[in-house]
Length: 352
Image 1 (cartoon, rainbow, N blue to C red):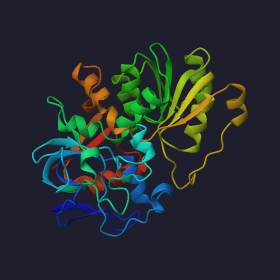
Image 2: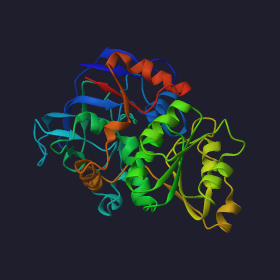
Image 3: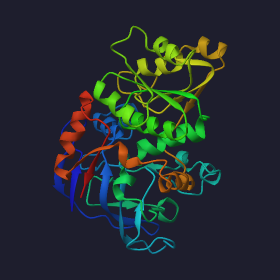
Image 4: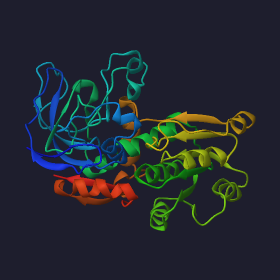
């Protein structure tokens, strides 16, 4: 089968013929229809802190936002059948650890990030393997397209989880989103669907325009103002109720915390690059004196997918609206490379 293959950190992916996967006893093989191309793939490709320690080997396959059709089923699988239209969470969970048993499968003690760890080749390939399939496989409801599911991959579901389950966004809240890449634009769309007033912050006018299309009521070009937190505070009459760092650099993280009103909630979704090395100094005195919450969000628990499906069914969410372009497998290396200079807008999706 054809796949976009990792060679080394920072070196272009190569399109190669590789062996087809076979299911382990608890797993299934899915034929890939679509897969989002995510900045987390870019981080892993670059060898940024969280990913470099995992030691991706030459020949590895990235890609963790897929949808497709089951084509092979392991002998111990009970609830998944060949022909099922499915997606999977990017944090593949065993379903048995304390986190999984307490409805936090996104932080499973034994989680395997699809395509982002050596033991799990990803979906920039014509097929990919899913372990612990009875727990991880998510059937697609009728009426939900594969492109919608690729748009609902890691970025969209993490934004939803961060705003709905980790923070406490309610109608009329001011929500600031710092960084309008795929995850930031997803956060804009989700916050708007929840009835919040969204302020979108970015350096690129075209991304801010996209944010307005997805529901942002105000935008801030960070290069055009002297102080981003002061600008957000002026727009929101004292500060945002919830603020999201959707990028993960020191400046956006601190701006997100500093733009909050007292008792505000900061949601950290963006992971750091090599410049930060996994750590960012924070205005801790301001956080203490204002009783500001700092919350992390990664993926979404497997049992809560139906919340998004119901909102899609009733027209309140449209993950496909964040999809900006569809590319071929041969275009994946170039698309991933363009993220180095923030050259993508929205969510690019590879179609097979």
